[in-house]
Image: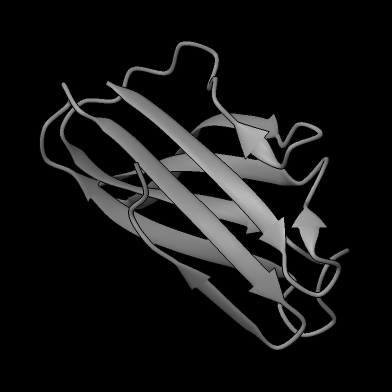
Length: 104
């Protein structure tokens, strides 16, 4: 299974470089961090350092404080049903709104 993300800064019209993102997995007590990374010059994270991503519920927590005065962080929860598939979870951020979707 592979997971990637892409952060786009809509206010500046370009990828958001050097954004810290935590990958967390839900367990009985809530979410726990299993990996963290920073976006590259193209606003992407393609590698989570070998984190084992089995079927389950996860979330990406984006540290967006430097990009938005209103949203200091954005948490996007999603479910991995088939660990054999690739999952891409982009974030489009503007000062007072954000959107996400399952990409390809």
